[in-house]
Amino acid sequence: MKSAGQRVIEACDDICEAFFKIVAMIMRLAPIGALGAMAFTIGKFGIGSLVQLLGLIVAVYATCALFVFTVLWAVSAWSGFSLFAFLRYIKSELLLVLGTSSSESALPRLLKRLEELGCDRSVVGLVVPTGYSFNLDGTCIYLTLAAVFIAQALNIPLSLGEQLAVRPLPLQERVCTERSTCPTCA
Image (cartoon, one colour):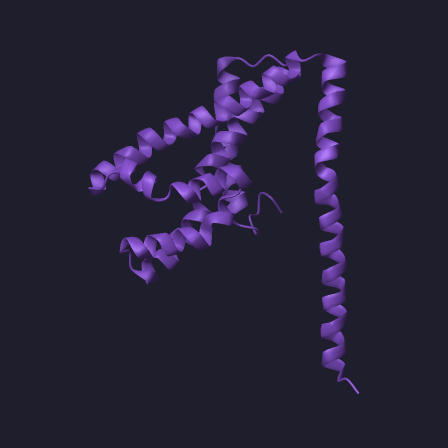
């Protein structure tokens, strides 16, 4: 006869398995939903509406690249290592991030690669996960550009002052993303 604890564990496992099946179904249907949304958008607003979306994607990637090659280059120069050599060293992890649209997918491999590079394991184990949690520059870049894009898509004119006022909002969102107990977001 099974103990009460064992039955609870089995029940939790069954619930977990059910949720994983639901998520798997959603993941299989998501591309169909995205295709349907794109077909509706093209049918109603024309192909030009997707050109605007492509412009947003290009703007986000260009801004992120500008950030990497200005801010991170300055930090690497100050620290005494070559940014380009480092980017070449972690290129497979960068491609994984681009392919999955999630930097978390590359975390284990990045930790291993940095240790192979000679970084102390305790430093890598603290700094990299902390950077994932608190250094959300890409999130701020995307949220700022997306807010302006949505205003343009809805034909809401924004003055220069209003566009500049949008800038602090992603910074607050970044703080809320970092802390689940943020009083502003509760």
